[in-house]
Image: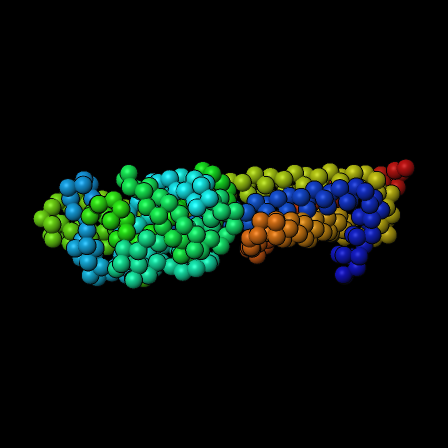
Length: 396
């Protein structure tokens, strides 16, 4: 039985090695393209989510509608004490021109943050240290910079101890770099290059001293596990309106997690569409299998006639040709998977990232490929089975 399903079909395929190889290659390219497209899309979604999470996109941001409405220490304490708020941190944000000790200048966004910002925003130190409570208390003239900014300004990653001059609200101040961080996956920074802003992080109290501002630009909050961000938004609005005697509409609370979810859905849709386009190549490969099998039926008429004349039934003939179509699909799938793994591994090494191929994607792609191959092999198999022995034996 195994010989009839595997050995004999393989022998028949090897009769025309070049033709069989091209057919297998068509299936392999189709399988490989679908797997690679899906893997790149999945990694892209994962990396973008990480990047957005690193910017605090998993929580809520609270901002005042006008500068007359307070958003200061009292509002921050009130938000921290709300049930369901895991962490809250004040944020100042100002654009600035930064100048290194060597005179090189770059535009940057300066963030004034608290020492607990790392609980909400991903600040992963590569060198040096983070901003601590002592820095906040003493209004220290220190800062952290991201890795890309360090390379642009100093040509190396570890720039701890170097001085940096920034201009905020017309005031020029000198800061000492105490830490170099890598924010999130760095994918957006690498992909967008100069279009992605440089980030400098300083204590928010230092930012207050530099700018003379007392109100925060924003307060970023992170919800406790299992807490609905919608209900938490209502709680924050009510709390702020009570302590300040203002209307709920006086504050703008943005659900960043919702925005991130919308972006993730868009990326998933794009990945699905691209995978569907790649799947068309599998259908084309199935058509090529049907073409090859039809040619094979025409070439093997005498062989079919001899088998029928010695007692082979229609089922035996159908099984033989369907087995050959199945072999072409299976070999093509295995080859496609091997090519996809090789390309993904090489791409991962070159880009210094880890791209994981989803086993479910492999299973679905191979199933689709094999089924399409067998389906397109049915017609040639039935055509061969319907040939009459007398007619086939007369074939040259």
